[in-house]
Length: 207
Image (cartoon, rainbow, N blue to C red; front, side, top):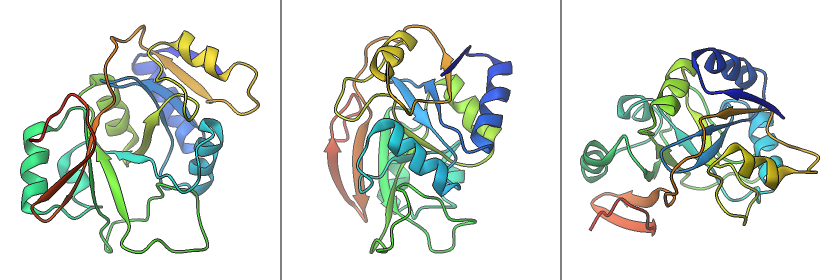
């Protein structure tokens, strides 16, 4: 597990790792998160193996802006209003995938059984470092908390090292932004038409 201080230089290193199918850990406005290239199904599978997450539990996608997200998911009027009000910020909005996206992205490892009416949880982080990372990478990256599935969220590099100690598969690169303030995970809401269904409550309250 390579560890580097979060900086412009380490963003360059992180992008190289992502382009070569690696998995990185970096700070967000909530906790440390894991990221990989969503265009690369093998990288997505590696992320799931690192996290020990069930292959049928999709991760979210981090975008650089609402405009970029609109290329991949369908925003209803309600969804767009909500996004413009709360993003960037600790909110994940689950929306239908577009059939005419610029290229396919994978929020789960490949499966022989197609998912009917697929959706994606979209994130636009308010963390300047996370924003710089996804903007510099140039396409959406996976985002999920940097912990073993079922274990507490991680708020420091030492938290990450403790959880992954002795594990065979670990993140390739950890970008150290210091100890983060304790914060709940993002609010997760599915928005279909004008119907808003909160799936997980965080700091952002939609009603």
